[in-house]
Structures are given as C-alpha cells and as structure tokens.
Image (cartoon, rainbow, N blue to C red):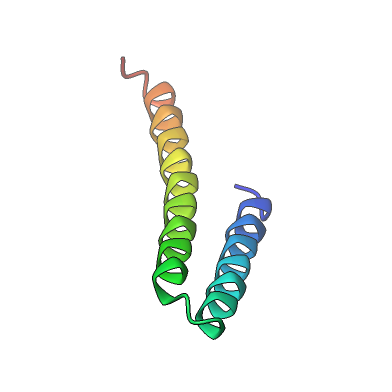
Length: 65
C-alpha cells in the first residue's frame, strides 16, 4: 500500500469541505449536503477498490479459486 492513496483521500476530503463551506455561505445548504455525500461516495469507491484488490491478493496467495 502506498501513501499516495492517503493523499488522494485527504485531497477529496479537503476539497469537499471547502465546496461545502462555500455553498453553505451562499445559503445553498441542500446542494452542500449533496456535494458532501458525493465526496463520501468517491472515497467509499476508492476504499472498496482497495478491499477488492486485497481479497484478490489473498485469493491468489492461498490458491483459492
């Protein structure tokens, strides 16, 4: 596992927080909530891909088919 994925997740989090705060300041709370949820979904997809790669590696390591 590289540190690169941690930086990507942090970048998505910071960008989501900035966009959310900007939208809340211009009184668009509903769109800010949608933007926050989109950021969460992006991070979850990244994590699910990592977990999938982990299971594939374990499957090949223990020769499970």
